[in-house]
Image 1 (spheres, helix red, strand yellow):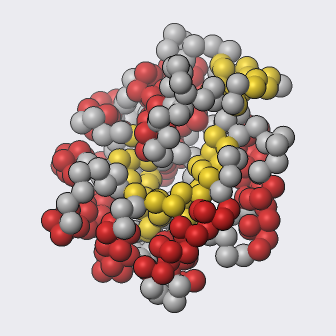
Image 2 (cartoon, rainbow, N blue to C red):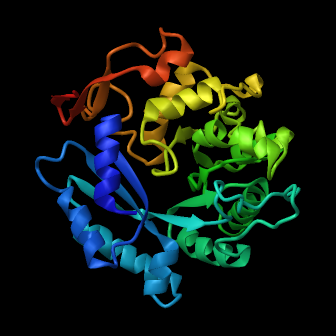
Length: 336
């Protein structure tokens, strides 16, 4: 994805004082050049980058330990106060995409087709083991319940091989999983960066095709995570969803579909939990909660000012709340 397009859209529509770019790979000069532009003193946000383990493994001819060294060197040479490349975070890939019905599902699909592995489970385990042993926080693209089962099994295996109390392994997307898997996520100490917009766009369609109503209507069951105290944030995966945090929270709070249907009210989260997801929890998952995520003494003045209080309005109105201004490192910029 083009860095400039993504960043410009994110900052214009969501007025974000900080951004996360997962799946970073700067092997191509044009991509490095575009990201370098965000280092300008006029840029009103910081960018935090998580490197792609798969792409850097290709660069290292399949040697994951060499890939670790490449990532650490990149973090050291490229990072500044505007663009931060993590030297201890990496992204892996489990099963296929939710929008293309390529995620791995335990009970398969209505038409009998099979999901896909982006990385075969054995290859994912091999990659994760190296980064696990190097103390990295590993973010793993995981969509279906079979994909989730696979990731949980890998984390359980690695925890036995080399126990880490705060491994902070993060599930990215978490489109569909079971309540029993939510128990396991909490038990193993995983974090979740979820894509709640899947429910809005796909619950109606997948009720008819692919999954059937029982599974489709339980897409993105965020309440199971909040009930278990799992630190959970939301992301857009732009262009898979608009880069508007309030809209993402709205999706999880209301569970209303594009056709106006409301399914599984028992899986709705509260407005307060929705606001936690796009502020405090996001910072916790990215390891920046010591400097941002909440407004308190000693932290950076990085936050967004809204025209209305999302905790005081009707929950269906939350996505319509306008952005008044964005504050970045104590400087306020009003939003038109």
